[in-house]
Length: 195
Picture 1 (spheres, helix red, strand yellow):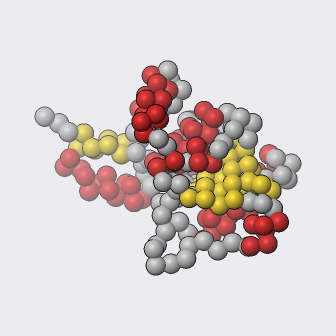
Picture 2 (picture 1 turned 180 degrees about the vertical axis):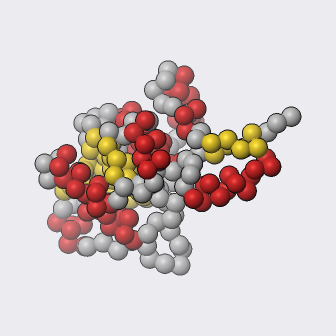
Picture 3 (picture 1 turned 45 degrees about the vertical axis):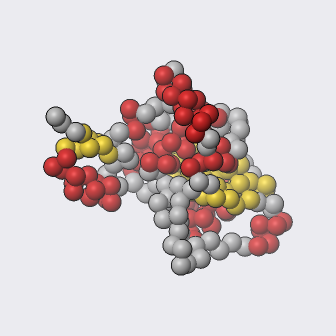
């Protein structure tokens, strides 16, 4: 998602939804050199984890994020907003659209209901402020190149993978793992296979 957004050093990036994709977007934005990385999630545990892994700020709601970004950027707005929520809803994309500055980019990684229109934006704001809204599949990564790069970043400690695992489960506890996922109690749960 950070690739698709084109995050550059010194920028302000807002990431909506700190799950498996969002937490890695936080790390990617930090690694790309973003000055301000704002993680937005209603669950305190996820915001805390985002700050551990590179977010400079966090907010519990889109409204808090808007106010925070307004203060951080002296009213200019974020350069990029990345929507990583599991199911795309109109209000989240609209919040991301509103938080970006003139010429800013909203990158959406989540999926919406194929039978519904899940994005509804002000066309005048889109044109007059030259904002971009785009989707990305697999973060627009090139696996042939990027897997090796990610492994190198992991080996040098520039990205954290072990810290992404927030809870482990035995196979017998798989239902608890799913429930924790649904309840937002973990970011990356792993089922351990015991021999």
